Length: 105
Image (cartoon, helix red, strand yellow):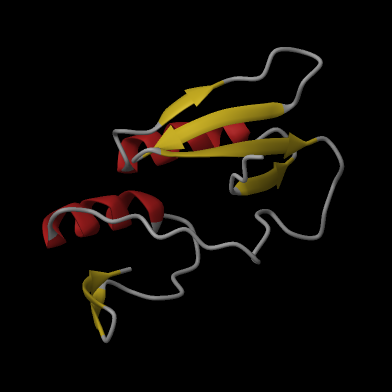
């Protein structure tokens, strides 16, 4: 048995999301689905996960019930990734020092 994190998007945005994530996290690899499959296979930092670009409309863009922690080596790397990911999206935790991390966003 293998358990992998799974992200669900919808409305054909997976490719754009992966492109953006790849800019923020250069180690990300992505294998697109072969029709009729709709699951992308992604990997970063040794963690494999799947991404479904669901054709069905939903009341959300990204399932808010999952979180991913990406460990970066420096505060500068955190800030660089943040600057790519925060553009146009809601910021839930701005870059700062928190009880659990010296630099987190």
